[in-house]
Image: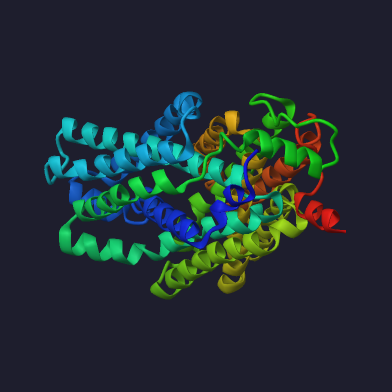
Length: 426
């Protein structure tokens, strides 16, 4: 039996701070190419279109590769898996120093893509390792709060982009890779010693969850391909595709409709950052009260309402439209974090890394699908209204699918985890 101090170890301030900072570095490395794609492609000497397509293809392959090896990676302790991933992710970033300053030759571009492929695979597996440790060592009534704190790394990663811009100007396109690679290597060893095990607490974890939900026997958690699991993956695909439709076409719409002036662009960036911050705050304060499962279905309905409002005002008032976009983005981020926490809580330690890798793979597929269909929908006579209403329909389908399938297997039941704690105290 695992002792109470071990189960609460993840919530200790120094471990939480380590996890947040380590994820900040990894998330920043994963995301900084997108907002600066024009600057990176110019420095590398290749076209923006060619570089964007390469990044998209590499992201998809990395998701599939991490999913294919997740079953074997799950045999490792979370600390061991995270340390290996951070170590090699750092090496893959530092290896850009071996490349020429321009990637005009085919072999240089291919090598760069292989380095990003290696980093992307390590990135996905490290996220699964950290979330698996969190799910096994944090009690259900604290899952939303701790997950919200950990995922604040996304907001902090966006704030760090100012440093990326400075590095691009001072050190060229290799500068951000080298700095993030060095920082990633520094976190490998601390994570190895800090992350609590998910193996030794798995039996206690399933027993405690079963008792809290009034079951007479231990829950075995969801199977990877159970009815409820497939409903979860399908919900994620629909929800993320619907949201990425808007995110993909947003900058194009902003430029065509409002001229994309400095004021509008600055306000849009502020709205996105505020949406990310509010999502983390909602996850940390509200999710445990209403329950992680209910968050997943609720945010899809909320995104649908936000996108409908976006479509109604999209040609009339920029600030009202951006406010609806900010709400949509907030609920999207909240839903993504809730989905990861939900998947972590529904699967046992033996299958959790594989399940979370499947979740991240679904997110990558949703981005690719939306990238393919967004522009054709936008070019229809309905324009942006067609995009946002298509997204709203997908959100409603996602919420309906999740509600209809989440009780489809015995699993761990569908009782609200946040209220279980209150009932036990009474």
